[in-house]
Image 1 (cartoon, rainbow, N blue to C red):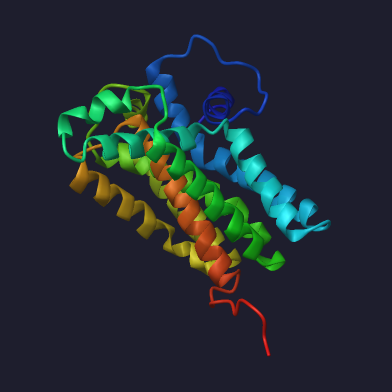
Image 2: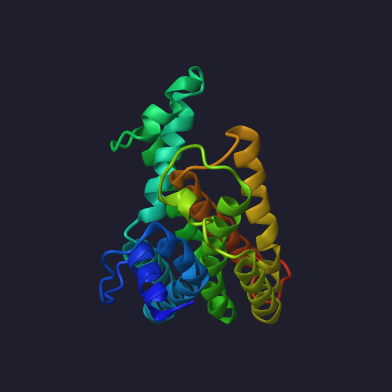
Length: 251
């Protein structure tokens, strides 16, 4: 991995201002994917800090600011993928041939809007319930989610050419194993419930294979959002200890 690759990964995944990488090749983009989990971890640290600072004023406000930071820093990149995939699946329910036509349509339909609203609502609700002791674990959730595209693009076939299928071209599988081990160790130390993340990644990959037979860039983006939602909800339910929290009023 090189610093140029880190800049390219940051430029691709976020709005964070970094020196622009121009004239990069598809092979270079593929190699830069090794930095994706690291960039995700940096994003998670930012979200955790925003939530922590906002919660000093009000817990609900802190969660809302956390979701705002989460979406703004990424430019809603993966929310767009979720919306496109949801619209395409809805449109192709009776006519499978419409799937790619709707997927390529830049407009967002009703199902896409609903999917975005639900994803943001679930993140907001979960962040309001995450205890302060579990805030450091928020850094791991975007990192796990951005490991997903590396896994899915490595072992699933691309349904059409695009930036998504380029991630696996020159990315050694050893980077996937490396980040898997690092994130598992960090999760075990900070929030054991996040050790279930590989099951979430595997589940999305299995669903893509069974439902579509492969992936597109939008499928990868949707998977990032789904992974984040599932993990932040799990963290809200179990906290940093891994044991279920007792929510609500206590007698």
